[in-house]
Image (cartoon, rainbow, N blue to C red; front, side, top):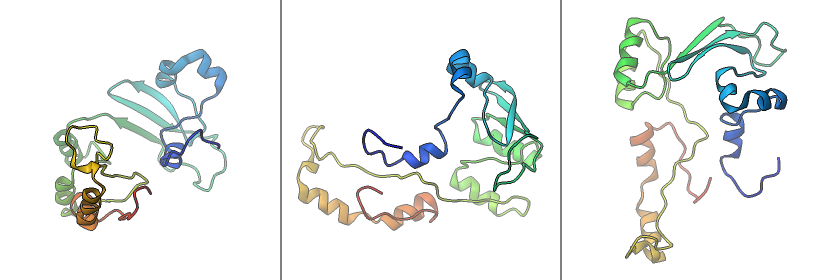
Length: 177
């Protein structure tokens, strides 16, 4: 793959949000049609889509041989539940098997209970702070390289990882990963 310009998240995008569709079906269905009746090459096929509510998947028996093997779960219902308290209530009631992007304080409470398994793992996502070196905001002290260097040395990167990501990340000591 040849990129027109540098793009640090290219590998992450290729492994997730970038989709590849059959061109003839995409031309016929368009983006909206693909969202409602998607096709793909994965271990599951989409059986129902209700925008903003849920989509249902069923194991695809014709899935090719793969290092991942055949899917062991026959049916999956992925629901959109924006409210964290509702997610937690449904998890406790047993109507959900999995929730993700749980706020850290809630995850810590869940981890204390024997019936739940909580995983906090790193991703390929890179978080960073940027300073206004170009002076886009009025009277920015960050146009002075000495100020930028002082801030760079003052930031305790490990403390940020420990506090915000509960230690499940890797400190990067470069401007770009």
